[in-house]
Amino acid sequence: MLSGKYTPLFLFLLLMISCSPKEEKTETIGEQIFDWHTQSNADKIAFKHLDLDIKVSFENKQISGCALWTIDNNKALDSLKLDTDGLGIDSVFVDGKKAGFRIGTFVEHLGKPLIIPVQKTSKQVMICYKTGEHPRALQWLTPQQTGGNAHPFLYTQSESIYARSWIPCPDGPGIRFSYNARVEVPKELMAVMSAENPQQMNDSGVYHFKMDIPIPAYLMALAVGDIRFRTIDKRTGVYALPEMIGKASNELEDMGKMVTKAEELYGPYRWGRYDVIILPPGFPIGGMENPKLTFATPTILAGDKSLVNLIAHELAHNWSGNLVTNATWNDFWLNEGFTMYFERRLTEAMNDKSYADMLWELGYQDLEHTVEDLGKESTDTHLKLNLTSRDPDDGLTDIAYEKGALFLKLIETEIGRPKMDSFLRNYFDEHAFKSVTTEEFVQYLYQHLMNNHPELESKLSIHEWIYGPGIPSNAPRADQERFKKVDMARKQFLSGTPAKDLETKNWTTYEWLQFLRTIPKPLKLEQMKLLDDTFHFTQSGNCEIADIWFVNSIAAGYEAAYPAMDKFLSSVGRRKFIEPLYEEMMKTGKQEMAKTIYEKYRGNYHPLAQMTLDKTINKK
Image (cartoon, rainbow, N blue to C red; front, side, top):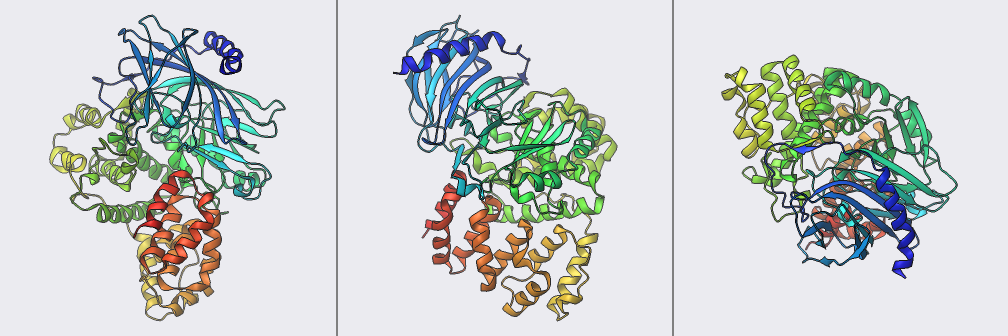
């Protein structure tokens, strides 16, 4: 049965080899470093290109097909190793001939390596496989879970090491490869990937993709559903469900301008098109910087463009992360810290300094809370992490994002913005399509900046920032101009000034977040009602504002907000929002309410969110 199923597919993939794009040279700077989070032997065998041919079955909730790897075994190894997590391996072919294989021992967090005998002359290795029962990268949505659409939906989330749960691959951030893909889906649905994409549905249900720039596995991405596309300008556009496409295109109408502003800061956008797909509500994170096609949460569609700085963040990743990538997950701050700094600079360019200052200050507050939660002396508050034998998601905290960004902000403060911009642009240009370790960045920093400014040694305290805990004492703090007015209004309200008399007319989302973050918790019920009657927080369409209001409502026992909160938890899957709500219920004596709501809506959440919330809800 298996032989008959895959023989035509095998011939198709052999044809694809001859059409594969010419290899684009990539490298890891310096000596090969050890990445604990991959069991592949990509440090010794070069994985040049992937030809992927898969079928998506919603009936079976399964992806099946073949992955054909073009390799260079110049060190004459006798076996090739790939990362897998729950995959069922049907057959393996080496240079067109059926070959044996074995599955290695399971390692927690990493899955099981697939081990295939090869020879020095081996050039192509094909694995025919299917996904397992609970692949962590995939979320299968029923029509009801898409928010009312008549069709099901599938999307992937491969970061950090989840690509191995839907593709047998060398799954490490320092390992790059190009790819072509053929994806078969139900005829009434459309497929898009982190590649060159179609802009309309076809009649066959078969879609072809090409990514000729080598990328790491965590940037492999696929979405399948009743998807529509609208153009924004000649190189940007948006995909979304039909009922969401109008709102999405209106909200993101300035995206083309944003790309141009980003180029003015740090050089050309090198990925061709920049499109965004607005996913159904269960998407567990804000956005994912998949090349050519950012995956984004619908929670950014506030109706007033107030939350599109998330797009600024994902766009910035096309320089810091996609272009210059952290070599291992221990160096994650090189992706997120640089991107957060870039995002704030881009947000300032699109708005003004006072607007960006609010984001810097809110980020500083988030960093303080994270340090408090992790422990001021915890090694997990270092920029350079040690995630050996651990889930790399343990490093996905505000340390990488906010502490990393503050370190770059400190450098800018000391050397001035023109020199900082020149330094960063050269860094992106010289390391384009390469992977970098923290130590290599520090070496570059000394060679291209510190050696010319020896006085910076004592001012920057580089070792303390990168290899030390907590928030260093020389961390810069943003101007508080706009938040001082917010703080004054809060004090006036708490002193008895009616809510309607507060000076809030021109407040943005971020002024409101500052106000709601800093009011006492729990607030008196009568004060909660006064605020709600005046500003209608319970009915807010802004997820950032609604979420923190619901947290405060739980703390205060403000039951008038509970029905809206229940609806919110049924339709929002972003971990940033749902986790604090369940945590607040659990710690304020509302455990039964948390369990009841979670039991109703658990199926709407992504597997990654489920893993976290299962622990939160079931803890004793």
